Image (tube, rainbow, N blue to C red; front, side, top):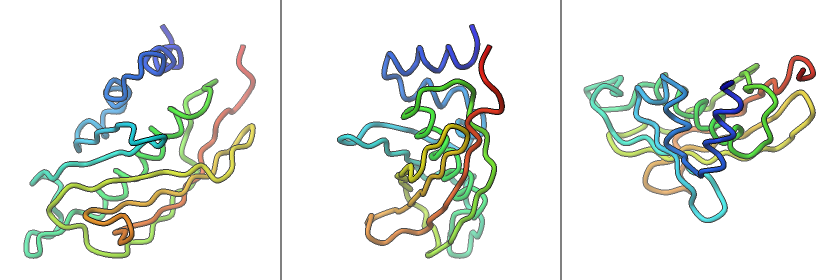
Length: 148
């Protein structure tokens, strides 16, 4: 079974966690995904291994960025009809506040969905969605060629 077929099977079962199992880094840092109303929301429960600055303690910026990139990828894979696995082309992040030692949440919006490129914006927060700790913009390559 191809990876795209496996993902389509997971989507038909509405098994959000099985999708995470396919992305080793997302699984390693502890990403979880669920539906909240009509939106997919990813979460990252606090883990000591995700701390970058133990003096504050603050989450490692790379973990925040990796979480956001994976949240966008998971959202995109869930929302669109897949021909190939989307590949990250560009990722730009603005760190707005330090990530504290608590659960993070991410929400992704697909701003543009073309035949070859998707543009997504991701917002990450902890206690209050109106006080994001980071925002990111990413482009994904959807297909390099036509499927056979």
